[in-house]
Image (cartoon, rainbow, N blue to C red; front, side, top):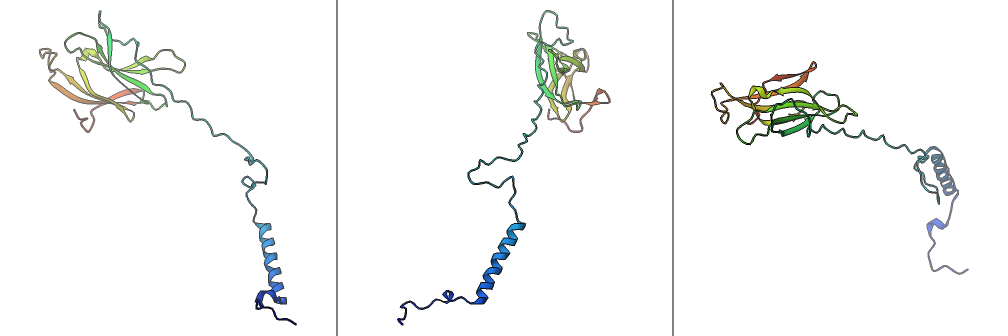
Length: 199
């Protein structure tokens, strides 16, 4: 008998114990595969187009509601022959109903001088064509000018410049106060902010 040039390899000779070990390992893999299953929604079949079992579209977010536009609103200001000018505007949800209100600072469009300002809150009901004035925060009859105006965190803030007497010329207000309005118990309540608003 001729001897092989390549020495014998250990694994070419099998013993009964190796057969038992192999059979046990295969039995363990089969048992494990019967317990662990892939997620049927993610398992891909060969040649099949992977589609989810049920496709549920996410709920669409409600369309944002536009804030009322003060252009063309009939403000309660008597300007005689000149028109009403919207100087400033800001919007926010002041009453917590999920719909924005617009606050507008308006005055008469006088060619000279310092006409007093009015501050008005506008709402536009769903389906309504035009916004309407629902509150007057500053009446032009009070002879005040409005600066540092903002709508933030459900409140309206402003710095009001006024006059100590009718003898003070309208060009040069000599009084200054900070004001804040918030919707409480069905009305806009005016207070003085605890922090000056930078005027």
